[in-house]
Length: 157
Image 1 (cartoon, rainbow, N blue to C red):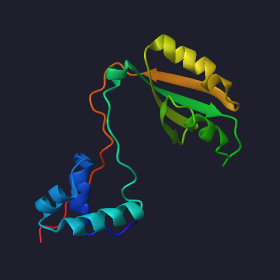
Image 2 (image 1 turned 90 degrees about the horizontal axis):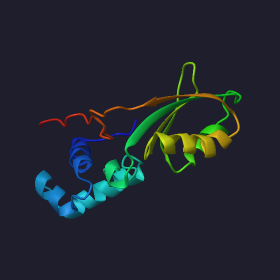
Image 3 (image 1 turned 90 degrees about the vertical axis):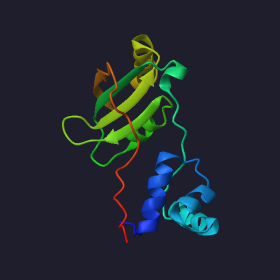
């Protein structure tokens, strides 16, 4: 576990909600000098606490109306991650999770519609060696979707 103090926790909480927030805005909210904030943010990046800064795009703006989760069973030997790497290299795949249970991997993918999903599964996923079977769940409606983590509250001291 990486050691974080209260100021680190407060910085993470503020930038998780708005990654475009400037160091001067953060400094004002935390009562610190902008240079101190910059130094702390750089340390959080170097430690790997802050992995990247992303823009969240509405999938409908790109006509990606269909969200699906695909469970994959593979015939790979235990410990081999070649299939997972091959899947992760497919640009349409948003997430790849190595899971416990009957299946080996869980994917998250967005496409235009069911026809484009079928086409992608045949032309991209279906060409990867090692897949024994798939099960696909199509999302009817998304009630909550976030990449936000629960950040512990900083001490009030």
